[in-house]
Length: 80
Image 1 (spheres, rainbow, N blue to C red):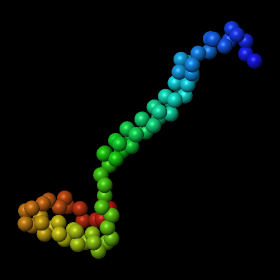
Image 2 (image 1 turned 90 degrees about the vertical axis):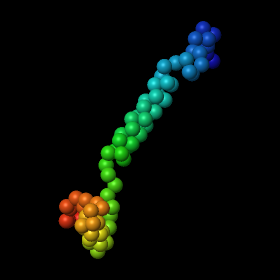
Image 3 (image 1 turned 180 degrees about the horizontal axis):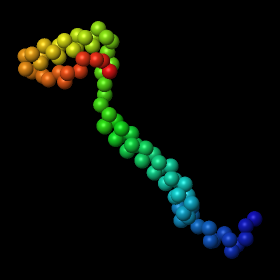
């Protein structure tokens, strides 16, 4: 049994600092990781993954468009 003097001083859980610290610590980590993931997704371009034959077709299409003056191929001859 608890003593009567100790019973009234504890108060509800939300009046203490430790529960909020224990909730905010992982919440802050999730928010920081979310912004890092967003930055990573927006800063890195999505590369098209194709097989060698498809790459040659795409490259020849880009060269044909460049001859027509519709698009600049960029001059890349090797696949990445």
